Picture 1 (cartoon, rainbow, N blue to C red):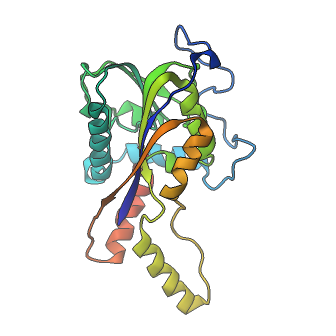
Picture 2 (tube, helix red, strand yellow):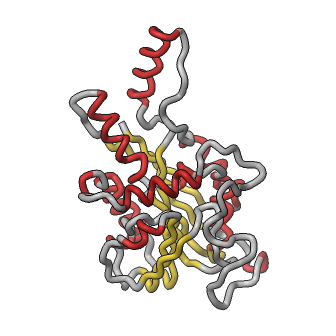
Picture 3 (spheres, one colour):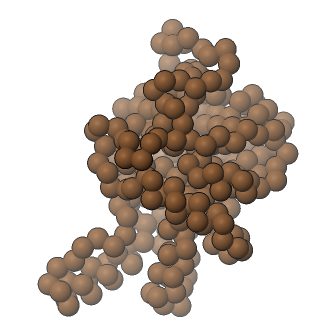
Length: 267
């Protein structure tokens, strides 16, 4: 079972907290894709970001991407539906961890004027899906967004933030680049995702080996997301949970599918 923790956030704060950017540009504290091994001093290096970049680039080169992209397509469309629920237009929007553009393809130019898409893998950006919105594709890390303060009216993110080492920093970056009345809508895998697989592996390994080691990447508990968003400076929060059930004939078929998705879930 895949459990998605959805984030629907309206950022409200005083404009005096920062001077709105008159144009887009790189800022020194966020210079695009980080160099190998660079990270926030407070972050635990659970994920090798350089290895993740290589995995995403490999996945983007594989044939038949639609065979494994059904989750990205589904979640991207759900996020787009949330954007349409907001009765306003967004002149400038940003997709953090865009992959092949799974959100932008479901939006129209009447709702979003211009769309910036950021991803850590250059091959993913080369394979962007067709869309009617004018787009700009930028190679950058989710933890080091290369934009000035108060730049975007809307920030979205689909199935990307669960792979970052420092989620609080990533949320702070998103808050920083949003305008005072900006909106953040995103989705990431919740803490109970793949619960059945994790329990089966733990029970089997404990029975045979007398203990177990983790075989599934950790996910953030949905109950913690509100606190993390509040720490980043967001308010007027809505945190939803959706369940997407995918059936497999057996565990090995599931693991084979996950082997492909381990890279594709970020492309």
